Image (cartoon, rainbow, N blue to C red; front, side):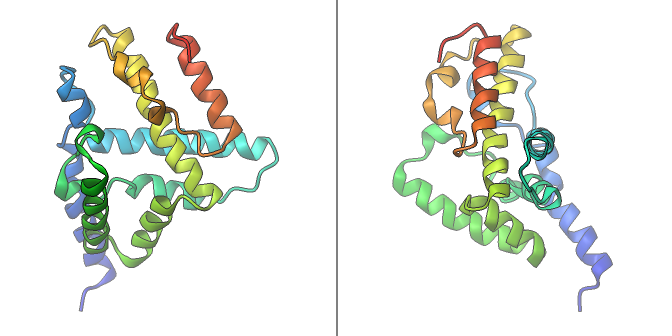
Length: 187
């Protein structure tokens, strides 16, 4: 029988590789050193927290704990698969990867956290939409940061509309517009 103490230790050990696995998209574009998957997950959690606070200030009811739980585990399966870049995912491959990631998430995470991961994947609740938009916002802020540091010209990120998915959240849409503006680009 696994104790709660063992579950805590086992979960952290299972997800620990995320700290050492680089985000493949940056490596493919010559950005070195680059953020790890764990760095990205922290950034997503931070953006999601800030979005949550801003949405609450606008009068929305948001379960902040749920947002953070989803944000922190949204890339958990990548502890086993590594970061698979989007261009390599055909529709069929993406479906197979989604199925694999679901099995891995179930193996890697305690039941409650698996539920949070699943909710983030489904993107149905406001909280899940916050996390999904935070994922893209964090990435585009990182693009802006890397370009400001002269660590690469990352034009293709700005040109791909999938990188600006706001999940129907007007606040996320406004954040994306400000990122584009700060980069001196046009949407």
